[in-house]
Image 1 (cartoon, rainbow, N blue to C red):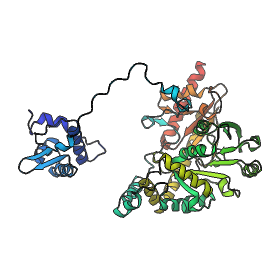
Image 2 (cartoon, rainbow, N blue to C red):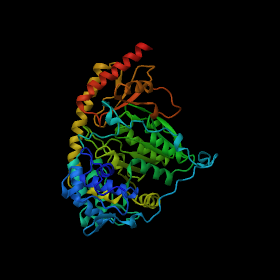
Image 3 (cartoon, one colour):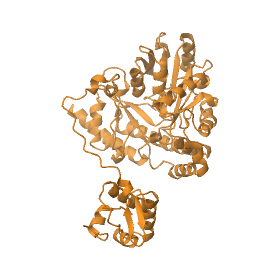
Length: 496
């Protein structure tokens, strides 16, 4: 039997790394807990003394002492006077799991039993390793160099104070953090020309969560949803999952062609601040026309304030701010400014509708994590979000201009939409260009682009359009990235 001083045993069980994001103490605790739960430490064998283990791991003795003490406090170890630390047998009282039997041949056909076809709808772009790419022109991701790490950590530390924990740790059932609602009401919405009461605001897990709840609550099978074409593909899929029919409406340099919306539509989904994906704003005249026609034909307008958080040279107020009939439902998000992984957004609508959405949300997820809500509320209240928006707006505008300049120099045959604000540029290549094939070839050279096919309603087919994101690529990498992309375009043109 191995002894407590068996160097090979403990070196194999407890491994630490200077490159880990965890502290040395946390790594030691994690390794010992894993070894205990995997039954790799006999109950009769004491662990090495703190001094010996510290020497073997090359760490301070105090680090091991603190790790052992916490494991004792948590019940994983028992400290026996003059004998040392042993595994607590109560931790291993549950018998090990038995190996699961393999399912019988010809098991359940889950595909035949499903009631919706989510897996067959267009998927998201496959950019899992975008951070390892040399030139990530990806949309919707963040730049670690611009992330407000210190400020975000400060707000999370504040949210973990004893008094704050009492505010968010309880089950809110169908409610939201009142401080976050207050900050959305006072700091975010007025900039978009929206003035709402607290009972007209609900926090969501991003804009997609809001869309899914609206589709579930309001859309009947066969309902007509007019939406831009090209347009936001995930919104189109969500509406189809609800049984609605999407009605593609063309887009030009003034945004959605409002006159082309059929009178018998039930809903209009629109991205008026920056159209997804061309970034063109809906003109003032068309905004007024859309609101007038919505009243005339009893449409409900779903306004996704896509890419509106960043400072714009000529910002227009949201449709919701112009609405006097209560038929515009407004969706906002923190994804483009703070972090896409946070998954926190908000919806503004009539109080009666918001109350119904709260009732529906309770059955889906009760409420978004309250600790995140409080941290974001503190982030807003301390002015960190305002400062971040100014920093991001300046950085992204510099990147946008650099990208347009590089495209004009190295890809002059490609038409690029020059629209201030936002986090991407929409490009159209020469006739016959297949940006799907181009994306595959470019990826091999470290350039990630997004083909435009998925934004169009109808059967997938080769498209000359693509979207280049600027939120995650450093300004000094933009010109080299476009040079690489231009080389791929040139090579494919010669081959053709």
